[in-house]
Amino acid sequence: AVEQQVSNVMGEVQRLEAKYANLDHMMGRIEDDVKKLERARQRHGKQAKQIEEAIPPMETQITSLGSQIEHLEEEMGTDLSSTLTEEEQNLLEELKATQTRLDGEIEEHTQVVEEATIKRQKLTSLLEDNLTVRRDELTESSNPNSRSRRSIGGT
Image (spheres, helix red, strand yellow):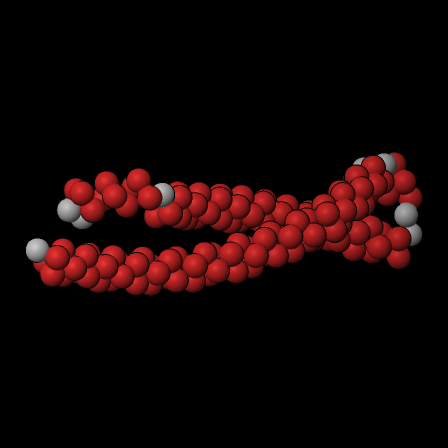
């Protein structure tokens, strides 16, 4: 009877040691996953910061180009254009061409800013979603009650 109890206890100890080793292995994998996610979060954070840093200079440049266009538009269509010398008229034509080019640049820069903002929002959302899912997984895997329910349920 004592030998049977010792045998049962040894069997239980071996079963618990195997379970511990399995859980230890799972925790190692989870820790590795957390480290990978943290590195990804840091990388995404750096990317978002770079995008954020690029936006103000672009906005300033867009504002500046807008001011230049307004100034050129104010000068266009005035009565002075008919009294301009040929050289001044050539300059006016160049300025009109510059205005057209600047209009295009403003539109391009505005699009770049919008795309950067959208990309930043997507990255932030994805990062938050990933971190939430991983936190939930870690919470569930580290909760002793959820483990015992799974083992009772046979999964």
